[in-house]
Length: 386
Image (cartoon, rainbow, N blue to C red; front, side, top):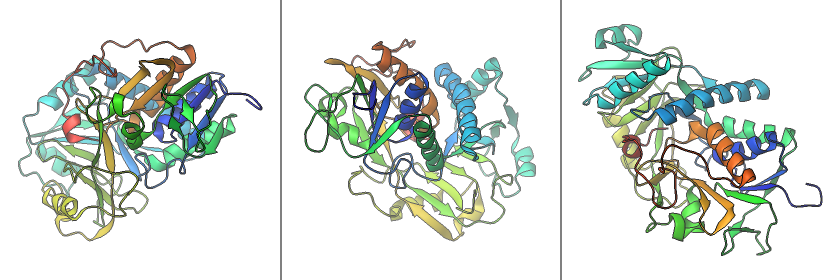
């Protein structure tokens, strides 16, 4: 790429952008990644301490299959980077609602040979003594799932990208009328193809395609995280957990950050250019209210809170598509709170599609910019799980 245009330009160094750049480099392309901030920094969608990785996707066999592949890729990245990125804490789905999502997930996992088990509330209490079983009817447990050290994972992908010959440029890009990239001075940035993976900034950059009034609208929504200083709730003592009925999820204390609790409460729309330092007080109160499943959280001291957000689409399905007016331009966004774990798979799909100028071959149109299909029904658009 020295002295010439790269085969691929990637705008945005979050999890999808960093993995797209890394996968394209591994395909032999020359690649430049532009990121205004540090990849995996704290005030980014991908930059918190942790994100859940789970196989359960209801009736959605496609995303379950993606998770099987991405889990391998995350483990391999950790080995190459010399650090643990995936933590096999297990993921427990605490069934206190109608259980339809969990039943469909269990069926798909068993068909695919993904380890899972259905356990009673009594057995769950025996395994995890700090558990509260009020309203609990059963538990669907994924022993080989867990969580990813999120910010560390993005930084590791970015380091591997540079180590393998990729170029990271600190700066900001904006789209020209045809979707191609301009630098801060308005000068065109030459590239064979461009992938825009700009997270919550994507609607501002492409309002006609993913703005509020577009069919594939992406709306940044605030969803905060609260870290509690609760005893006996570390990795190995409790699982990563999700309770759809209570609309809450959590991750055990890891590396002394505290027990992470994510109440499924919208604290308003989110402006990424004015990123708050702490969680909204209502989010904190909601996290306390959701402490039915682990009662110690109700009175536990707070170690830290973080203002977080996800880029939500109407259906909860991503936007991964070619610009309708420029075949060399691609958009990747709308992770809807559950896209982090799919970074390696999204990256590979986007890299192959952009480099080959070839639309992705997928079973439906759920990821399209126009004429989108709804895809399999999913509470993830409502729950926004990591």
